[in-house]
Length: 69
Image 1 (cartoon, rainbow, N blue to C red):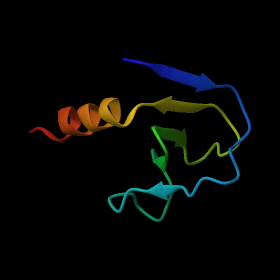
Image 2 (image 1 turned 90 degrees about the horizontal axis):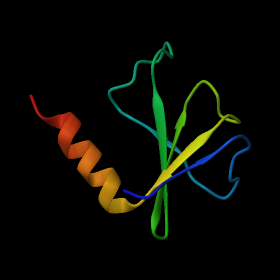
Image 3 (image 1 turned 180 degrees about the horizontal axis):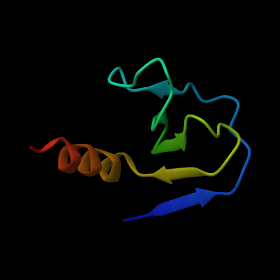
Image 4 (image 1 turned 135 degrees about the vertical axis):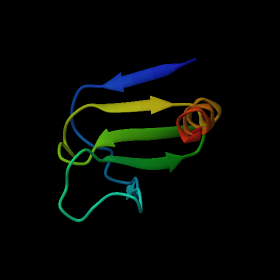
């Protein structure tokens, strides 16, 4: 799996989304933004902190694996 971590700053052109399962009170939330060929993931409480970048296939595998009961 190809994973890239940036150590700060945000890509301003990305449109970030938080899960509809996240509560309004904050907590343990991730935000995700998709761009051509990559999916970016960050901590919603640390928007200028590190960002994880993975391939769309890697993100789909992660979502599938974590959605299992």
